[in-house]
Length: 476
Ligand SMILES: Cc1cc2nc3c(=O)[nH]c(=O)nc-3n(C[C@H](O)[C@H](O)[C@H](O)COP(=O)(O)OP(=O)(O)OC[C@H]3O[C@@H](n4cnc5c(N)ncnc54)[C@H](O)[C@@H]3O)c2cc1C
Image 1 (cartoon, rainbow, N blue to C red):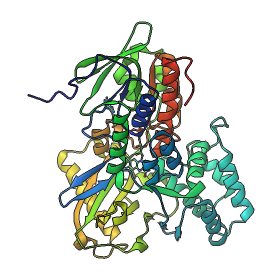
Image 2 (image 1 turned 180 degrees about the vertical axis):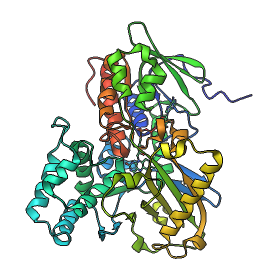
Image 3 (image 1 turned 90 degrees about the horizontal axis):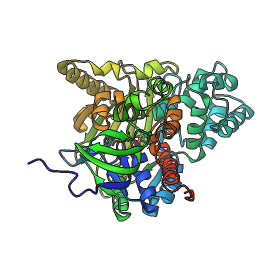
Image 4 (image 1 turned 30 degrees about the vertical axis):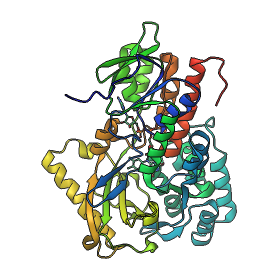
């Protein structure tokens, strides 16, 4: 008989959290610490959402989205998770760019970027300083009509090299483009520039295990392989229950970490919303997806530490987002994982990531799909050969993932890696005005994406859930 993953659940919880991405996990933890009974439902067999990993023969462990995040993650983890988690967050110092316009290394801090843009690119210090001050001063309530392209032209007119240095890593980090609102760039860029790029020592598996232990200690009822099929709404438009694996469970409030469009259009259904809100939801653009190639070296093999930690490689002249998304890959970000990523191991791994269009992969026949994945692996190895000579002989395991893979495991429409474009944030934030007690947290609006954005949005939303359940409640 099939295992009942919901055996022993209660009939009712204060809060049901749908999805265990970093936003769902954090929201569940904050609410449980406030004393609410919380049920966390995850359709996959593993917690973490896109903050995930997989194991392969030979003891290899691949991280999917552990490439780098801003220092703010340390503070958020200390405050909303544990000191132990915060203490494992360490800086990556070897950031490298290789493209037809420049070849350089940086610690990815404001100080180092200022040095590079003034000394190597010949821009006056006053201009660079003014740009950083401008990016830093941007906030959510600013004029949102100015695009990143316009902002760059204001400070660095015609300087495609400077624009590329400033933009390329952020496009990789959250899928934003020159045509997105400048504020989405300013906030994310300034977050990184405050201290550089950080990672979690021990790997994503260790992080998620520590988070799970903390959730359990705080009394969260965690259920994996539990797919929420429906959110029930009362006639007076209040979220009242979920249907999960065919079972109905009542609740006082719901925090959905599922994709915002799926939450509204699929789990609840259009009929329960004002028609204008449905239109607004449908108009939300999803962000792009990703392809990755995972490469593990044979025991005893290694690569030189001159590879750096993160290498932004491109064969394309100039920053061109269409080229970055193209199936005909000319840009790759390589993450080099040294043994110290998982202390005590002797593992040398490389993950190549490229931004990708779902439409390029969605409708291929099974045969073509397999052939194209193989081609992706081969062209990635060809490219990597210049940084790790003899990579084909050194490699023990090579495997690719595509937008279809991300869609399958996280149920994000079109395998969107970074949620939605900016307009998704408003829909996410105003959801509770449509249906009382229904909240959303997760990658939306570019700003609230990535590990840090997802964690922080989980905190912000759980505070709203708290206010809804206990109107006089103090804020977190
Ligand atoms: C290839 C790649 C590389 C990345 N690299 C980085 C990086 O280096 N740094 C960084 O900061 N960010 C990175 N990101 C982005 C980052 O991983 C995500 O923004 C973040 O993890 C998303 O968290 P989330 O809370 O929005 O939810 P998600 O991680 O998207 O999780 C949502 C969860 O909800 C579950 N779910 C959905 N529907 C249901 C349902 N109906 N019932 C039950 N469960 C459901 C899903 O299974 C999933 O577990 C990367 C993303 C990708 C794809």
